[in-house]
Length: 459
Ligand SMILES: Cc1cc2nc3c(=O)[nH]c(=O)nc-3n(C[C@H](O)[C@H](O)[C@H](O)COP(=O)(O)OP(=O)(O)OC[C@H]3O[C@@H](n4cnc5c(N)ncnc54)[C@H](O)[C@@H]3O)c2cc1C
Image (cartoon, rainbow, N blue to C red; front, side, top):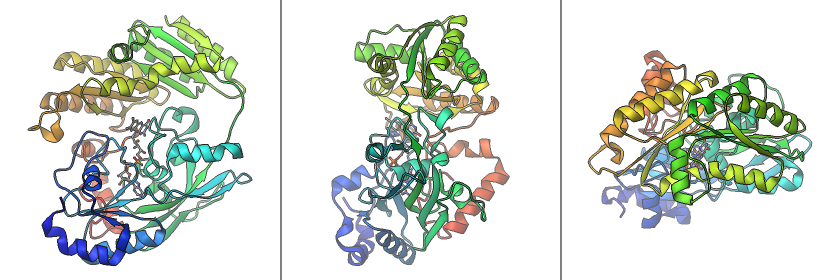
């Protein structure tokens, strides 16, 4: 139900923006949550379905005049609560802005609207022999705008980079409705400060991304090689991954699942898998077979029992175990998907720390890692507690707290790819320190002096 105190704003909004304003209770309710499990207490005023840059500008001018906060939202698949909207806020949905405006094979770039789904973009690019490399596991359901606003990672980052490496220019609508064009469409360019870089990963705090110029890659038709390997401990699997990286091999994919993760997968999907730690490595490009052989040698020398395949279907079966991770956990209960990143050499130590924390708190913490990046997703499965902060039991928060501090001690970071949103705000100062935190707040205030964009998130 719409908040009655918001009625005058709603009427004015409907008058200003017309049919693109929705008050459908189902839509309002959906906008309270993303995929983090957190649901905002209140209900937003309306969802505005922008179709054009002018719509976004009109909304932001309205927001500035009426001092009404705006939460920009792509597909709502975020894992940090950053797109969740509450009482007194307007939701700006970009889903209807989903066109590809240009594909240039010569310049290896595309210009797109923010609401296009990542996988849809890649399907459209395939006939051009091109692809957009950022591939979060949510690529079939998340928007490119959301990928940019979270600087999304995924399975291919060690070799192909994160979203930041694939975005060279943006059009952004600021809080007062001003349209800004930042970045370039050239391979190089250093004019002025890098505002494109600042926007990427800014979680809807600095402006609304309304258009993006993306750097594309040529599709390499060479067949891939895939290795599936079991280890008796996750530390041994992590050591193998670290040695593969430090020996200069650059797998396209290198993922580790620990024993609790494999147990969950085996239980849920009745897959014929062993409940040991699992390392899956995929190499691509012309050097794929040689790199796979070198990786296999390292795996076997460190005690891994491995099989390698160049057959696409067999390779997909070896990867399917990894892809089954999220659905298997969701079947067990509420899940808090965590996201720490450590230097690659510290990966075995971070797995060790997670095991210790799990024992201390009596929790199984199934963990998957993008091992080539040192990025771990420890998952807490629990029964929601309505009286606890965000429904997450205090024991889980205590264990998560220790885990974040362990990652920071190992030279790592609180979040490798999911962002801060609301769920990690309280640890931000631990990583940034007060002077940097203050500087970041000041930067936010320069872009958005009235604090209208995604208030209460990150800071
Ligand atoms: C099953 C599953 C697997 C996932 N795997 C990965 C993974 O491998 N790697 C990874 O990085 N993430 C992953 N995610 C998290 C999530 O999909 C990403 O963060 C994704 O980039 C969010 O895109 P979205 O369109 O859903 O954005 P939303 O959730 O709608 O929004 C996320 C943030 O971006 C802001 N935003 C969205 N659009 C704009 C815009 N146009 N302008 C300004 N701000 C904007 C929002 O305000 C919010 O702060 C996964 C999620 C799920 C559910």
